[in-house]
Image (tube, rainbow, N blue to C red; front, side, top):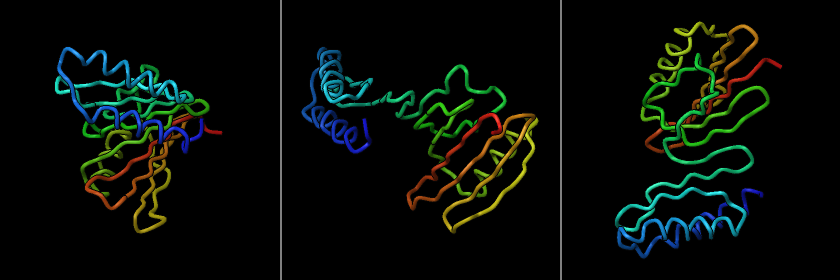
Length: 170
């Protein structure tokens, strides 16, 4: 399913939640929203709170997962430590690795320092760093036959977007 087909289905599923409901209806409401999403080809896991409002949506498509404050999968490399304040919002497998996107409540310098400390403590070596545009910074690391690339983007909001890809070197 293409993203242009997925987003309207998600929006409609979330719109179904606007009317609220009692706590005894939460399981039923979750099932209805998930069924609606499934009818449009979207594998969604929806959590509804006691007031009937959607509190979390996790979407799994094409091997990837989109949600809010996702846990890293068990097979995510143990030596690629993410700072604890990163809110993971998407995870996707890539050939011999993972791509992760998260939001961070910090500035570029703080995020850069945190990821440098986290990875060098685990034996990674920084191989390159640059700022290809005023709103983006990149840092590359290597360890043995693997590489980890981090892109930090200022999207103009209160938080920074961070994309991390870790994998075997091509």
